[in-house]
Image (cartoon, rainbow, N blue to C red; front, side, top):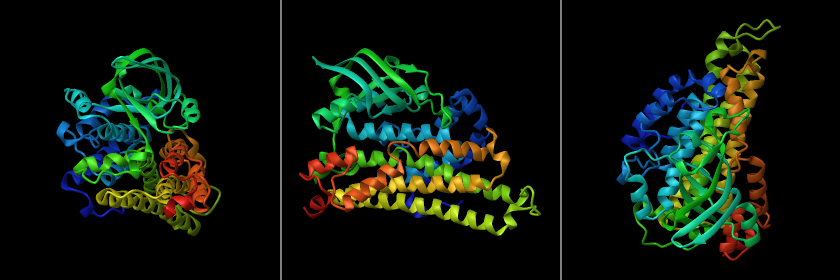
Amino acid sequence: MANLSSDHQLTTLERQLLNNATALVPYLQKFGTMIDEERHIPEEVIQKVSDAGLFKLGTPKEYGGHEVSIRAMVEIISEVAKGNGSVGWVVQIINGNNYTASLSLSSEALDSLFGQQEEVRFCSVLGARKAVVKKVDGGYLVEEGFWGFGSGSKHATHALLNLNDAKSMQESKNLGMMLAVVPMSEVTIVDDWYTMSLKGSASNSLEIKNVFIPEKYVVSQDTKQMSSLPVELKGRDKYKPYVQLITSITTGISAILGLARGAVEYFVEKAPHRGITMTIHHSQAEVGHIQYKVGLAAMKVESAHLHISRAIDHLERHVQNAEGFSLKEVAQLQTDMTYAAMLCWEAVDMLMAESGGSVIADSNRLSQIFRDIRGGSNHALTTASTGLELYGRVLMGLPPQHGMTLAYASSLGSTTGAKADNE
């Protein structure tokens, strides 16, 4: 299934990385059953992905990374997900986190982290279930902390963890994050990822007890940066004020888009050679209602991609012009991601319904896609009901219910969409 992005939107390097991802698809598809059964990605697969340069998409060039555009990151990762959902999810999470870390941390911290020979890979959890943290000389002491879900934890070198738990954030009315970099050697991975979906993503819970984190590895992140933009920022630094919106795009939707694309391609490939049991039809491809469903599913996936592209276009325009976002624009960007996820899920669900009884086999590729995209679409940043409620509330001048958008409304000095958009 062809991507909608034009080649001219990607650099030569980005096209090469996209080609690397495409070349990996058949290889990754062979590991689908093994990954699900063993609940992790084999090390040889991780090495293949690393050799293809696909863990360095979001890493700055000065540290040996590729520093691709946000658009290229979405396209490349979606291609990986066509090969396997769990691998796509882990590649997405690690690159998104590396990008977030590079925009959030000081140069001193980045030099220390990325200056080592080992390839740096961040897993993350952006909300603590429990965090008992004390400010001490030179940094913070995490007496006790528990985070879930740490996607890619078994393949990460570091964790990027929010030291604020939900209760403390609500009580203080500070919905920003205090992100801390913790080496995985200091983290206990709790083997509790027993799921129906994205089984190999190793999205285990993470636990910390009595760990000191130096001050330079802790950074406060909030949405106020988007409303007071320093115009002197240049190059990559221009993206720093928008890091939370960038996280909305780079964490979740890429793998979902790739899974949906893969489902359409797989169904189209198999349809000419598959009949419909208990009917006279010997080829699904020749049946009118199947043709309709394939056309509709493909349009849903392509429409999802258009929403993602719109969000990236809006973000890039604001970054290049050093413009603040209105509350409506923030809500629209977040809703674009959740609505795109819904369209992708609906497309796969439609194809699943036309695939006969054999599709329920765990080893069936469409069954794997169905399970993985269902779980991915339930991620906090891609849940359609949350996004659509958010957009509807803001359009009707009501205060947003979404934490990040609510914090941004507060930074504008407004609690209603109508007022914020008129300021």
